[in-house]
Length: 383
Image (cartoon, rainbow, N blue to C red; front, side, top):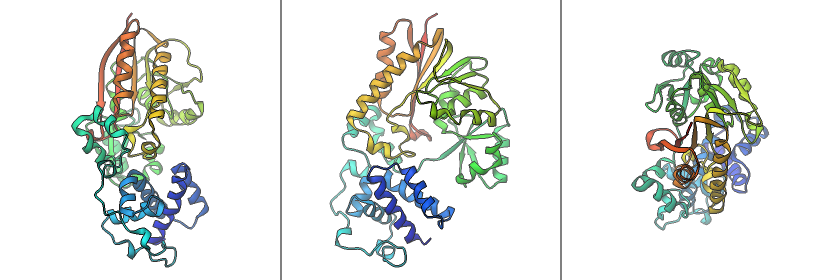
């Protein structure tokens, strides 16, 4: 496919996404219907789509319109390219420019330039203070790809060497001792022997840092209460914990047995958690604001009403999970959110109002630290 044809494909996909269809599903459906597109074509189109979703407001301003064509025009103009050289109508290129394709010449308002919904700016400023604008600028760009080295399968140095043999360059990151940032050929990771043989797993460095901050995992009985795909469960099992995974939607856990087998660990999957545990980890559903570089649609789907629902759900999960912490045990409350409303505003009242609960150390990570935004707090239960 030509560069112009890739842009036209991105326009068509974006129009479906803007109409309410999930981005990943739409990209998959497009690829199945257009099997002539090679892997490089699919990768480039995917990048175009997600770049446009991250920068939806500013690209629409540059494109002069809010549909897929407008966003892609903004993408091209933001890169310093004259869109007339690509929007030619020749072959599979987008149709030529018209009067409706001219950029908005007004100065960009702050929320537009930062690609943030206006109602969220005060919420973010309350939580992030002077770092707000710098963080939002970072969120306009693609997130790094990180791996977790499974120390049961080899050392960090061995993982780096194995990956390098397959053309995948990595480097350590200070966020966690097990974390590697992929420098080149991130899309080859899943096909690499290091991955298929369980030496490395895809996991953000901030998520690894949350687990690395937990003491005494070796031999501990742990409940991962919101396990999802099992990334944290695998990391804790690799540290010697006896891990039970649970999720309100059991379908999210369907890959855990195979991932555990590949990693050389055992994880018990329970649809209904039973008993008491030394440690309960609750990575609760949240706005995902710390991971908007990876899932930018969440930024535009979030509303004040959705936020109210989420904070209510987070409080409910915290109360439910607390029932599974043994006397003298600990609970970890975690989110991939940058917003205080989902973090300290949940844990502080809970600890103050709950018998036998004492709020311990908290960890605040943002994309300025290198990985996703993450919050975690330890709550101790009296013996």
